[in-house]
Length: 314
Image 1 (cartoon, one colour):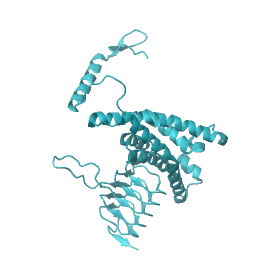
Image 2 (cartoon, helix red, strand yellow):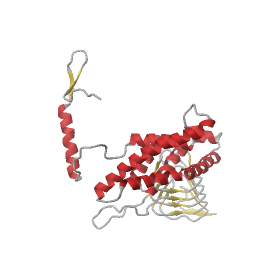
Image 3 (cartoon, one colour):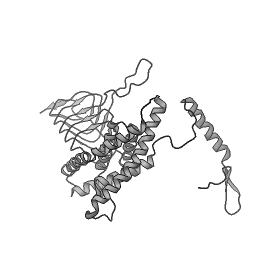
Image 4 (cartoon, helix red, strand yellow):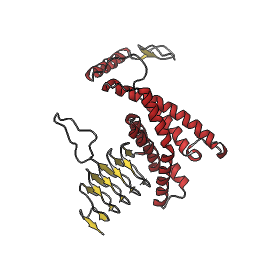
């Protein structure tokens, strides 16, 4: 690949410089070096240091096709060649995934001072991930069925898979959650952020979500890292399952990984705009109305509305 002279870009007609890039390039280099010094990064000359969002997008595209070949696979696919396509898509996805996880683990080792065999661990993660894909597909089938049952506008399960942003977000989340649990949190987070960009639904890959989960409409939904969601739960747009406060250590730094998000038990419905903060429990079979603000536990079978600011147990 060839590049134009870094000093200036010229007009084709008269060779007159449109702008002078040399001082901009030098200024950006100085900014990078200041950042690296402030973060105690050694200057390195080599290949890419971090996983690639573009590569991970390709991985997810292949995995979506492998999970739902006749719906999310190539347009000219026929059922008699399904298995061949799935095998090819998985081979492409898993080989690229192995490269990206190597980058993540190598980055972590260099900055944490570990001595682990990166190649062996990366291979183990990808093998375990691939073995879990049939279970991921089974979980996604429950999500698709929940969306179809839960929306009177849905005409078929195929429409749900092809069109619903909540289902797209859950495909990404089921994949990302598996990788998060296996020890590739950065790759998992990139997968979740790809879904966030596409759907407006922000689910941290650490969140535990049970079967038959449905996000209707979905834009503005936020589900935090330590959220636990049971079976047959439905959320509407702009619901937040977030943290109420962030604990700090003796030096004033935020404590990472502490349980700080809600537990939503089975068969709960949370309507649009509701905000639930902190490690509170929403009891089984409860209904949380639109725009409700909750920071306390709710007993099973409760109905919480904005007007009452209290919970009425059936």
